[in-house]
Structures are given as C-alpha cells and as structure tokens.
Image (cartoon, rainbow, N blue to C red; front, top):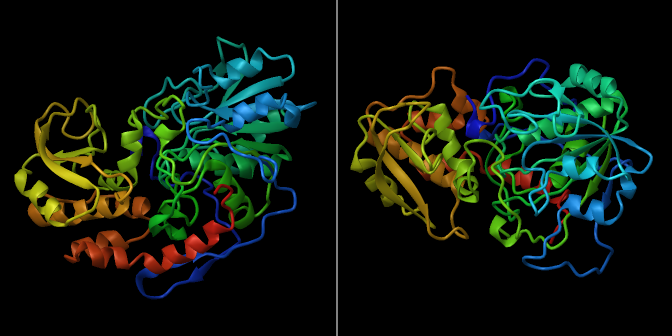
Length: 438
C-alpha cells in the first residue's frame, strides 16, 4: 500500500526499534514514548533573539537562509543532499542545480527517496542508482534502505555532511519523514554530520491530532510513536527523533525558516507548490490526507486515478446514503457531496463508483483525522460491502488495532476518538519540547 504514492505499510527489513521504550498506557490507549533531552551536539540556526520575521508572504525557507549566509555551515565539507522534486527555490530551480553551479559548495552526491530525486518513479518505486544527467552527480537510491546498509551508502559516497530538504505533508504515514529518520540513523552510524533545511508544514503546526503509533505496528508509514497529524515541521521532527528515538544521536544542525507562524497554511508562504508525490497534487490534498488516507486500509477507493485523490472516496454499490450519514455527524468545517467517479487506475479502475467528495469550507475548524474516522464509521454502517484490507493495513496506518476493532464493534465516532486521547495528550507534551516557532 502506498499512501499518496508515498509508502508501503509493510515493515522494511531492519525497521528501527528504539531502546527508549514506551510508557504503559491505560485502557485502550496503548503505549507512548519517554522523552530525552536534546543532545548537546544538536544546534539550530535561527533568527537572532528579538529579530523581526518577514511576516505573512515573506517566508524564507531553510535553503534560502543557508544560501543568503554564503553556505557557511557547509564550508570545507563534502556535501550530499537528500531531496526530491520539492527541493526547489521560489523560482522553482532545484537546489541541487543551484548548489552545483555555486563554487562555494563542494557538492558530491544526491540521495533519492521513493519516487526518486527527479521524481520519475511512481508509487512504490525509485529511480535506482544513476548519474544525474543535468549535473553529472552520482545519485544513490535510499528507498527502503536503513540502518547499516544505508550507512554504507553514505560512506561509499565520500560525503562529510548530509543535507535534507524535502517538503512534508503533515501526516505520520507520509514516508518522507521516515526517510529523514532513516537517514539520520544511518548518518550517525557512518559518522556524518546532518543538516536539515526547514520548510512549512502545509496544514499548519497548530496542534497534534489523532491516534499515536504503537511500536508493534512500526513500518515505513510510521517508525516511531507520533500522532497521525503531528503538527510539526521537518526540523522540529528531526530534533524530536534525535532526542527521543535514535539510540545513537546524529551530529544535527538545522536551518529554520523565518516568516512562518504555526497557524499558517501553505498559501500564506508565498512558495510554489510542487507535488511531493504523484497523488499529492495540491495543498487541498494535504489538508484532508491525514484522515482520508485511512481508506488505503479498506476496499474503498481513496480517489487514486482521479484528479482529486483523497478528496473523493467510494466503491461500487455505494449511493447517496453515505453522504447523508456523514453530513449527520455534524463535523465542523466540511461538507459531503454525493459523488460518482471512474478511477483510471488503482481500485475500481475503469468502473464508475459511488461515494462522497469532501468540500472543506472552513479549514480553521476542520479536523481531518476525526473526519476520516467518521467516514469509516458511516461507510461501515451504510454499505454492506465494506471490508478492511486482508493484511490489516489499517492497523499500521492508524497505529494500533483500536480504530479497526471499535469500528467493527459498531462504535460511534466519539467512542473511537476517545480511545486515543490519553496517548495523544502525552505525545503533545513530548512534542512541545521540540517546537521552534511561535
């Protein structure tokens, strides 16, 4: 299974198991992490104390600030970059092309995640090892590699410092944050520095929502216990990973943004949106994705093969009753329209199916995780053909058996959501220690 064309929920070989164990939780809450102080080797490049950020529309990314400072954090270093098509300037020039042309940088290698560095591969694929035709740089494939095998790739590349610059989507099961985790772990094993260039969380960094992963369900759509909608930037996640999850912390530096506020959606950034994966075409997709990606774990279409993936959901045999039942939940900020569509690929390819389209009319009050679970509850209630995927992928996506078993038992939305609240409150406390923006 590949949420947004970005991940398999099958645990990859050697999936990381942290020595920092989880606290026992009460009732259905399960387990959560313990916290550790950030290692002394971690540092953050941020605006000087009291500096005035540029404000709305004046955001500067981590890369823009690194470049403006003359790349001084990379001086004298052989550099490799972990990136994909989203690693661009606001003029949509790729940072690898910009850095390669700059004599101040000794750029030696590129490391590509799922879909590849230039984005030529579809879901569940990568570009493999090659030479980038535009720059002549060697490109190393990191997809589904971690631990010592990935550390050996970093060693073979000959770099001293690994730079990470990829746009995230804000959900635990969007795999680029686990590419970040795996690369940090491997860099520590290989004795490399690690530099994270920050970008906005496109669905804001206001708060964390939804169930927290239980470690027995760790996979490439969730290595460690964070919330389904984590509400963090990649630099903040890197600090959390380094302090709480990595057995061997990496020598970590971050370059923060200026001009970004925690309540900003992506359109406040002034940055172009480059789809981070084939089924994440717009920021509107990212807004609903933390909830509706759960339908990857069912026999319903999650809208792949349409122009509105994760906003359109449906299956053969579903009619207007689903939209009616979803509307009756009274969920804030969203309306549900009876919809019919014919996916061009993936589930129900070439067939006309019935279902719903989500229309978010107030994104400030919209809760994507509660909405996604509410849609599961109502789909199960109104459609006799509803089924989970046979491999229980829903458990890896939601992070435990709780959502699946409660929905199967006929629980309502509030009862399902109550089961994750104690885990979530503890994760929020851990998260607060690593937030870097107002």
